[in-house]
Amino acid sequence: MQPSGILRELLGRLPRDIVIDPGAPSYESLRRVWNDMIDRRPAAIIRPGDVVQVSEAVRLAAATGLPLAVRCGGHSFPGFSTCDGGIVLDLSRMNTVSVDPNSRLAIVGGGALLRDVDKATAKYGLVVPAGVVSHTGAGGLTLGGGMGWTSRRFGLTIDNLVSAQVVTANGDILEVSDSSHPDLFWGLKGGGGNFGIVTRFQFRLHPLGPIAVGVWNYAPNRVTAALEGLSALAKRAPRSQTHSIGLTKSGLRVTAFHSGPDGLGYESLVPFGNLAGPGEGGLEDLDFLTLQSRSDDFVRWGRRYYGKGGFFSALESVSIREMADLSISAPNEDSEFYMIHLGGAVSDVSDDATAYTGRRAQFFWLAQAIWDDARDDEQCISWGRQAGQRLDVLSQTGNYINEQSDVGQAVAERAYGKTKYDRLAALKAEYDPSNLFRLNQNIAPAHRVSEPNTEQAL
Image (cartoon, rainbow, N blue to C red):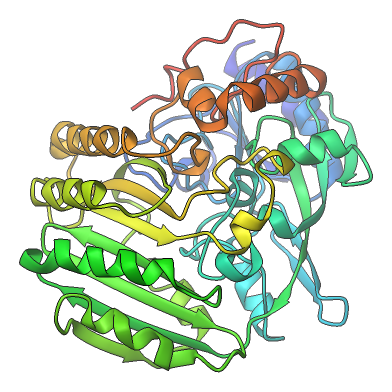
């Protein structure tokens, strides 16, 4: 069907004000996504306001036979939330968050951003473990797993998912939980957007307690020693504590975090300021919402990104040397290695309990090239890909699908391993046999032969 025919069909079946065509004043802004490398022009953008409109839009999209992209925060590295010549289902109007402090449960719309969730829960001193950039979409983050500052205490975002409302490929609206469609619920916990569109999440919340934060910088000639010290601290860290790093050619930035009422607080963070002699920086007095938005400008919309991530079972000397060497050859001052300390409650959950694979990991790492000029695309992507490949051979099996620029069946199989991938492929065949939801780290239905998604590859 030609784009003009698609628009006539959509406009005839959906409210006019939720269909954005290429001639609409808002089209140019709405078609944009976070990664400025991605420049695509969908035939139409649909902005539903409720689950019934989502269901109708899915049925119509399936009938056209054209690509369907689902957008929450528009934050994926490969630009999965848009497409050329197809339909974008933009959930941003469905962004409400309601909190019941007595039951410690939150209802989160499928189009909410992390900032929406954090603002709603922080009022009650509560938190759901999630990411560390506030303009990330809560939906996409959750479906890949979700990790952040409180994961060592409370697990991944998916570990706190109580139920979900899902629109499947045939337009059915399902209420999914451990007791209702448990197979689908298992697949949603790390399987990405392969099985349907989640229009509503229900999360379990936890008391955050007082927080403590410290930030220290170490010069390039002290990076190796500082990372060795960090490795030693990680082995004896309490669950109430975690840390992340940003390693660039300018040196190492360590952010240490503690939360909860165990009395350790700021005292437990002091050693992070003396990893290789005294670091530059110190303890900081800030609230959780400020912490959650500190990286927002650095990884802002309109920049160009390439990322490749993986898991370390431990932070070993060989990995430290590789990161230190590769950081020196980074193409600019902003390209970095990001790493966050996991373990704790994340590792309490059996690896078979969710589609997410990586429960035994102590660290997640990300080689992330960041730049602004399209003329630098080749050298920045080359560095990011090479850096990721060199760390990948030192990493454990399994991967985190949310932080990968490269796409294709090999990426998905590497993320899940054969046993889980086969189970996910069977689940896909049941809930999306025509592979309508294919703009993701795609899992092909078990009865189909998968091909690399070259349209989305960088």
